[in-house]
Length: 309
Image (cartoon, rainbow, N blue to C red; front, top):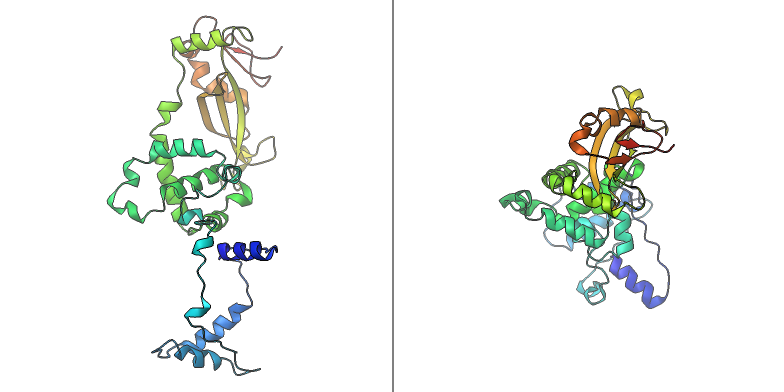
């Protein structure tokens, strides 16, 4: 349909505004007609397609019977030769036809990064079992999960995701999310790890002219929750006036994340999170000699954490 409308728009040099109905909130003038026709067809025997004509005409008596037009094969046209897109529903295809700016807006990654993640998980058993043929394409599953990770509020509702990707808003979305997360977490230690002694020396040498002996930078942020928690909600209400959980990250000068702490309620202060983490309690295991981590004024000044004076 979209290809047909686009072809008509180009050939006639007109603009066509295509409105997509939202799941659960549809209302069309034709709905009442369908209802009347369905009641007329109930318990009726249909032997040939032409039988539908009389039944549809007689479905309504007042103000007048429906005007029914019988369509033969000459009415239908093929737009195969003018197909601009293979699909506009990533849930039913590969989403490969979406240009990169729009794709990045949806998934928060470019195609190169997306393909890297895809290649990371594509050979895992979860996607290659006998029953895996019943799953949505792996590209679509990954795109849905990345969209969920980059969305909050109204954009993160199951109905919004279902409408965007052409999937059911039942348990399917959560099932594929769990599946992707399970496989990604298998690779966590491969990409999220604290630098060893040799790598820390290399990091120090690369930033010596700016921050001598600094091996990383610590800061906190928040992940907004979709709704108010049912238990102990006040603990999750942060200074940014939203319900959230806290994340503490340490990255190096190349922006690679080297350490993560997440899950504290939104009201917990950054300094408390750091004081309870292993980087603080076992500093001699993670840092040696004059090595230190840079932090902002939210953190307590110490021999291993340097904050602004």
